[in-house]
Image (cartoon, rainbow, N blue to C red; front, side, top):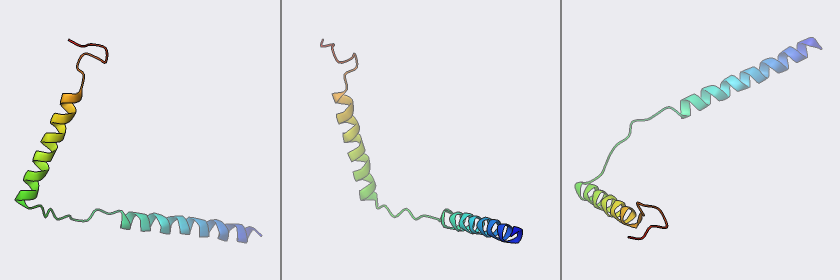
Amino acid sequence: MASIGIATRGGRVLAAAAFAVTLAVTAAPTPSRADVSPGAAVGIGLGSFALGTALGASARPYGPGYYP
């Protein structure tokens, strides 16, 4: 009976180790490629500038109840 308990525990440890190795291999970073054209980069920059301007203009700097 003791040998069955040891074998079961060993199987669980082996399964956990295999899972950890699989997770480490699949989560490893891979090199990326930045294929962004100059036109797309300009579009991203102008879009973020417009969004930041719209969000900044809608903010109330002195709180919700202050109207100068």
